[in-house]
Amino acid sequence: MPPLIPTMMMMMMMMMMMMMMMMMMMMMMMMMMMMMMMMMMMMMMMMMMMMMMDIGRSCSFS
Image (cartoon, rainbow, N blue to C red; front, top):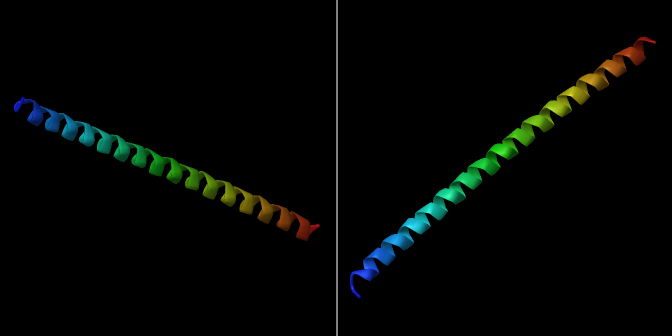
């Protein structure tokens, strides 16, 4: 019976470590996705601004 306990502890530790690693990976992936979404939003905003400026210029000339 005594030798079983350390192995169980080791298994639990390994499982905890694996869970932590998975959580970290998930967090990193989420952060990357958020960054990508932010970049896409910024690009879209820039494009809209450019288009609006272009329209404004064309309107003012006519």
